[in-house]
Image (tube, rainbow, N blue to C red; front, side, top):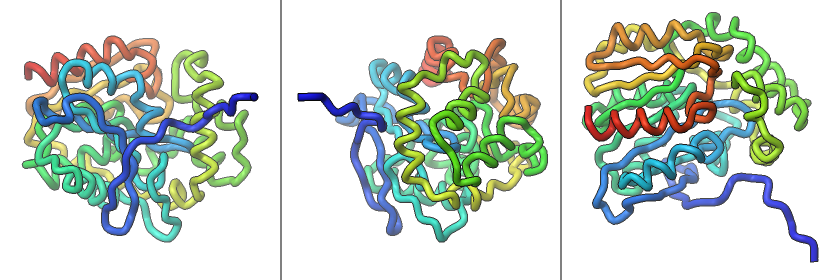
Length: 280
């Protein structure tokens, strides 16, 4: 008998939050013996927590942390309502709802792109819940027209909201996010394409992420930021905004790297995160 190929990301667990179903993976010290790290993924067609962090979450879990990898509303296997605006406040409400449902009072947040913006908003609004922040080219620290002028951002929005996205178009979008196009494998394209078929265009079309640059100085926890020198999605000057405003903070700029430092330089990223989480 022929074996059916699994294209989408693996299934995990679900909880309910304010009428939505949130999907997440839960690994590591689930017995409560270790601190908790929550990975918050970026945006784009077919994005999910697993796709963003499958090279990172298992390493931190193996080091003794409890690791949660949720799918934000609108992504992965979580609910994808088409009749709401996808704002940072909306995402934070459900991220905190997930933590409350699981019983996590405090954690470190690790977020890239959209997920980084969500983590910044969570740290500002719920400082008692956030021990540390790891941000990889986070959104939410520039005006919208600055982001839209970036070549990868404009291409992603146009393709996803145009209603004609196929595997070839998705591959082209994903390749603009990395320095080395070989990182975008057939498996990755198939995995994200399977999720993209379930996403209404409103997920990106109604996304509203305000500029939080003026609030960065109010973050009270330590911050570690990464930025790829070849990022075509978000301008890398954002890393210096974080470094200037946040205390304490550090910035790692990575050569030969696009928007996905946690994928293209996973070993370095994992080691730096563990050092930051263990020692700072």
